[in-house]
Image (cartoon, rainbow, N blue to C red; front, top):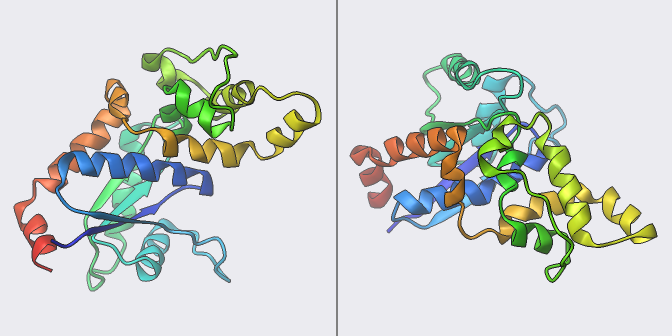
Length: 220
């Protein structure tokens, strides 16, 4: 049975943290092995800036059966972001063969999806046996946090249990620790309480229910 190759095109490098979440969702609904890639366009001599060109370059460098395009909603609605992605796809000449595209649009920022698993936060902070209380926000309220990335960094700093120079050194590499959080989460089902996650899972369910597409994958 063929594996599914998917590529994630995201807003920034920190959004690579979405890959374990996307893989988990696909495993919930699709009986195929999965190979992942993050479209790193930063080191190109002239990285494309417009979304249509970024999509094409991503698929040129990271061929895939499925493309996830990530945009944080931030101050805009999910529908607005989806329209932006769809308009970008519509600007791509039809002679380019595109795989199915799924929009990934967390409310505000994807860091909000990493604020529910205390054990994962402690492991990502390098202090799995820490006992300092972590004040995680109620899950149903994380989509309302204006700056979830700041909350994530604060929790990791507390979870580290460090002080003095070690704390300062940890703070300087906080983004690297943040990217590791989803690597220590085996079950993302609690996120089904969130509207943006529900919408993403629905989009994935609709895509994997496409019998023609699935049969093509299995027969390739």
